[in-house]
Image 1 (cartoon, rainbow, N blue to C red):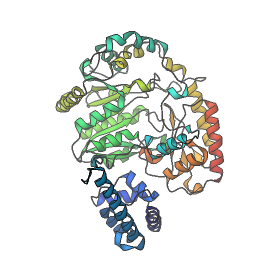
Image 2: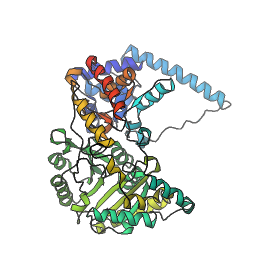
Image 3: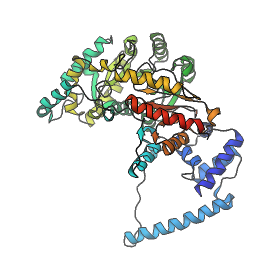
Image 4: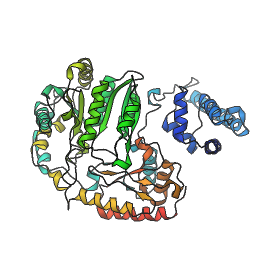
Length: 503
């Protein structure tokens, strides 16, 4: 019955010329809660919406979707009634005649999306369990691709394990925070003290913590599109509203400053910058960063800078920490060792406060409260920060000509651009490339469906642009961590797939 509804919905959207993003925008205008994951499930036939959403869809698409409005939906009602009755009987039997209580996920998760580990990944896992080999180009986890931590880092952790059995200070070990402080000084970020540094179980934990401490219901945060989806998810989970500003593919994926300006309102509290960028591989120049700082200063906004890839820069280009340009603007900078030292599983991240901390005294009190509540981050992982930041930076061997990451980036960039209907901007940093699909050539209207089709036909796992809050069905992300021979295999399969694929 879900497929009957989905067919009717897709036909109605096509007749109106609407895409999924148009439905979401209309829902927002009417104050109706409708998430990206929900509309995706409706159009793919995975589920049928509740009555209020059916009424909304009926209104905007001028088609009767109401349960009583068609034979199919009456059949659905009867089927659901039968299933519910069977379920109720089972519950009563299981509980000795008493109704069994059900536990459902919080409504706070209704609009939270994290497709990096979402439905297509679940399908890949199901296929693997059935005996299929999947080429995984979906997640930036270095270890499975043959990257390993520097020997000195492993030695230091082993030698300090006995000393790491207890809790540390909630913000982290003194030695770790001292090393981070000096690292920020070398990046010319002024006024950072030991007390301004918080270690975390990866940057992910600290992003969540920083949003929970800041946002009230309805507060807005400007986030890039495309983005690393955890930012949007954490803003949403904290009760805020993620407002996406465009990064311009025609301008090497740099932020569109004019679009930023248009999206600042009296509800805006902060701007998020992901530099170097995941998923595009962009590296922002100083003039762009300065314009963002000027905007934050003018509108009295916080700057959140996700700089986890700042030590993975190609061709000797310079990474500029935005906090170094903003001594009078309150900034929160995030980084860690997961990518630069190939230790994603150790969960070593940090958060640094700088700039005008006086205006954020109450917010900092909230950060301290949440930091204390989780007691501390992984202490053995903290113990390697000093060695990692102060010792020889072996990652440099990977990002120069002849190095694995550099050469894999060069290969995937050229190979993708050689496939008819695919184009890509060359990454300047990181592990990712964000290619563009010729949607007219391939007749693509649903990029998530494209990733499912590629997975099922060629056993290649990718994440669609939608998973990074890109609102057009014309992009996808590739992780180029696999060795070149693996990337060659993947590209050969993709070239064949695109030679015939039409949605």
